Image 1 (spheres, rainbow, N blue to C red):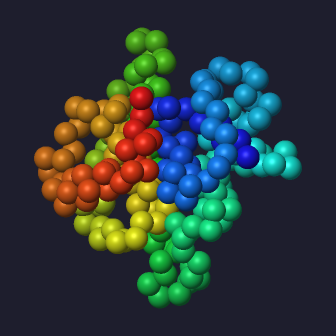
Image 2: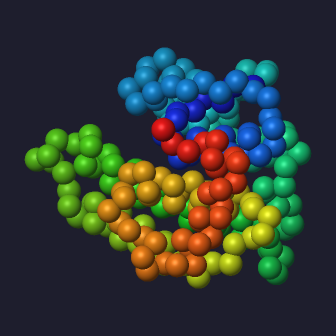
Length: 199
């Protein structure tokens, strides 16, 4: 298998965390996806990550790639209980993953608006909306009781918080969210998180 990744992509980091946690043996190919015409032959959307299987099939994007890697490696990051069962671990894990991915999407919006759009075309309204989404999501996460054995939800949230630190350090989110900060400090010490810190 080949995992197309980027050292700073938080979406790819989720996959790399699972690879590290499960000790999977695959090729990790770091590329710059933005504007990469060749890479669009792998993933027509041009997004990272993409996973090329041994039979040539290509999987994207991060939720699909991560679940495949988990199953291929015999992991338990995607609980198997039914979505409609009371207190479903799977439902909680997938919802938490969606929340973490939503934070990532909002951070990416801020980065793209401020870095790639010409100054005269930047929208303070778009950035303000995205930053508001980040703030409210982090407020919700402050009240979450995270699983002792991490799921894809915890991995997604951990990668999202690392990306907030990397791209929006001015948010100072820890100041008003001590429970979340304490959880993240411990989670970020996992070897898989240490091995995948964005460069």
